[in-house]
Length: 487
Figure 1 (cartoon, one colour):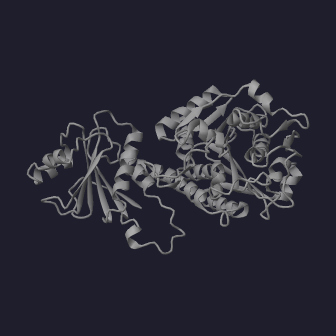
Figure 2: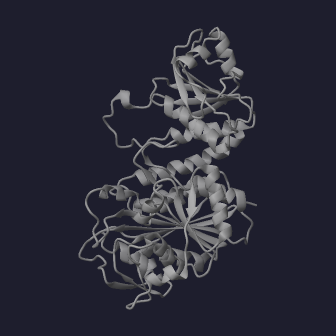
Figure 3: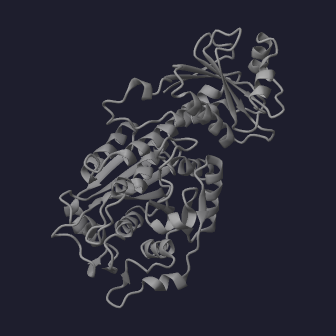
C-alpha cells in the first residue's frame, strides 16, 4: 500500500474519509462537504441512525456536489483520543475501503488532537494481506485500494511516519514468516530469511548442529533430531547504542512445524502448527524494526530454529537429555518441546553476551489460551520493573500483556526423580510450570517470558489485521525499547 501525505483539500477522485464527533458538529473538510451538499449530510446521518459514536461508520456513494466516488464518515465519539485510538481509526478506514472498488483514498485529519502519523500507521497496518499462493483469485475478491493519502496541516507527520513505517515493515516481516507453510519455512530457509537483515546493518551469525553439539546444546537438539531438516541457532546483533553498554536480549522459539513428535498431536488443526515459530518470528520482526528506524540501543537476539517430527530417530518420552547449562531433563512429553529449545537459547545468550536483561517469546502453551483467550499475551517475570514497562507498552500499542505468577511452590511441580527436572508439570498451572522451567536457565539475569500462543494468529479479522498472522509483539517490544532503553 502506498501511503502519502498532502494538504487538506476536497479530493477529485476515489474515496474521501472524514471524521465527526458524537454531537455531529461538522469541522474542517466535513463542514465544507456539508455546505456543498446544502446541509443535507446531517439529514442523511439521521436517516441512517448514524450519531458519530466512536468507531461507527457510514458510507455515502456519489455524494451530491462532489467529484469523488464515495464518502466514508467515521465517528470519533465524545472522549479524548489516544495515539492507539488514532491508529485504530486509520485501520478502520482501510478495512472499510480495501474492497470498496475505489483505488485511492484520501483521509482528512483536521480535528483537534489528531495524530496524522498514527492514522497513517493504522492504515498501513490494516492493508496487509498474505496472498502469495493465491493464483486463481477472482478480481472481485482482490483489494481495489492501492493508495492512501493522509491530508493534514501537521507538517511533521511525514517525518514521524517515516520511523513508524519501519516498525510496520517489521510487523509485516513477522506476519510473512508466521504465514509461510512448513514446507517453505523450515530451519535452514528461516535462517536465510534472517540473513536478509544484514542489508539493514544487523550482524547475523548462524550455528548448525555440529556447532551446537560442541556447545552441549542437547536440549535444543533433541527436539529436531527426528526431522530430516537440520536445526539452526540464529544470532542477530544491532549495535545502535554506546560502545560497551550491555545489550538488551530477546530470545525466540522457532519451531517451524510442530507435529508433537512421538507425543503426536491430534490431526485436526495440526496445519496451524506452521505458526509455532511465532516467537522467533516476532523477535526477527523486532530486529528489522529496530534496525530500520536505527534505534539507539545495543540489542542481541537469539532464535532456536527446529522442526519437531516423529521418526525412528526422534526423541522418545522418558529420554533424558543434557542441556548446555549442564542440567539434565527428563522428556516426559515430546510435545512440550518449545521450552527445550528456549532452555539452551537462554543459556547461550546470557553466557555469551552478558545482557542487561532477557525477554523470551514463544507460542509455548495451549493453557495460555485457556487462561487469557486471544486478547492478551501472558507475561511471567522475576522483575517488577520489566513487567510494568511491558504492560505500559502494551496499553500504548494495543499488543496487550497480562502478568501471571511464578513461585517456588509451582517450581516444585517440575522436580524429577530421574533427572534434574522434567519438561512438564501436569495439567494444573501448565503455563506457569513452563515459565518455571525456563527460569532455571536464566542464571539470575533479569528475565521476562512472554507466551504469545493466543495472540500470534487469529481466525477472524481484527482491527489491525486480516485473519491470519497478527505480528503481535513487534510494536509492543519496539515501544518498550524506545520508551525505556534508548540513549
